[in-house]
Length: 173
Image (tube, rainbow, N blue to C red):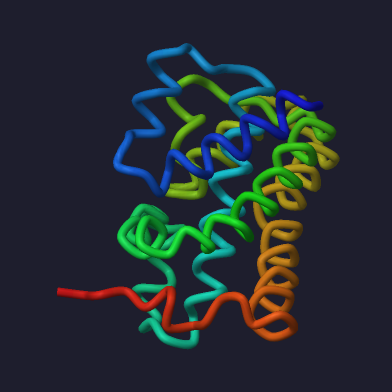
């Protein structure tokens, strides 16, 4: 469980850094539940950044966080390190959830997150392929991630005002 939490956090950090999360996962051969936890961390970080920046970014920019990559927030994350707080909290929680639900992955899928649905589809393909597996994948990669993103937006942007929407504004060129 602790390793799932840590992997979720580490890979959520990697996906918004200049480093390649896919390259690192492949290089270390991260597979099984560890890969699933890493993937869940990336997915929830993507949703959290998308939801938090949705009021200042165009629809395409918002969707690009999880359809493409949350790496588009790299400049904002590195210049405003407080943005790592909600993504780290979210990825720790979802790394644990993925471990509890026994989400699996491959070294290749570990670093992709929601992009191309690689993470969720791989987790399902490595499961028992029954109704409970579909529900577990939906809860882990979509439902809980979106709910957590909305909660963290409320906590960090509305309640405590530690993060402003402008902190997540994409500079589209």
